[in-house]
View 1 (spheres, one colour):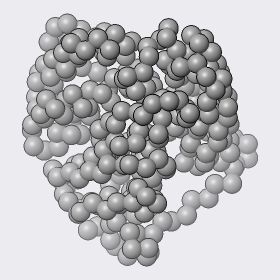
View 2: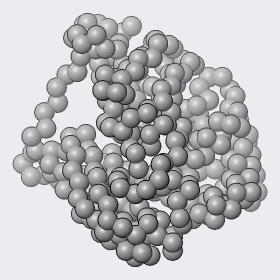
View 3: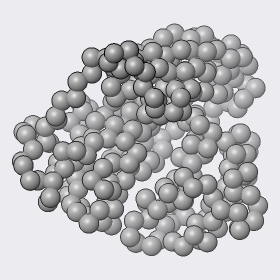
Length: 292
């Protein structure tokens, strides 16, 4: 799909959401309107183009259904927080803010916290599933960490001329996709909450993490560790944080009606030790396999 077509598809999708007041009135949509403008010459945000390219692969075609599904993710990224679209907007709920800190060996603080996952459990209601793309390119999974609600589907397009495989042996979320090269793609739907560690059965250096949550309020922290969850109903909930090296932690927060509560998160990565994972058969990787 050419750049002009990306622009047109983006604008059509954004402005088409006006037909749904419960969605179009959310502040995330306003941000997208500002980014997309009202004329075709205004380009979509770079992250939206990059997601389309990831889904596009080498086929040169992206359906409007794909545009709409990826737009859902773009909405959440534009707002800086993934909140279910059916939730009450600002003013009808409270806000949870805070900052996460990860302490490495020697007491050093991690400089980039953008792969820290924040979620809020105990809020009534089932989150709406999403479609998310994790691309296999350059013998790596990108992005390395994603967070999705239960029932979401993650697609794994291969943009390398090499065979790749995506698999996990993480409890109830275990899966195993076939070997495939560019431009093929595989996908898996995650129906259970938990941390899912994803690998390639050929290239041991490839890894990704899919955090599956049963909450509609979740996000990834900014690089400085700050986070914000909006439109949260008043009540007492559990604020969770996950980091690949720092593990998991949780604290209780009480959200006032229309007010704001701050939760400071500290994760300990001082004892983290990376251990080489096994292949999908529970065996060591064969030497030289990464050239396959």
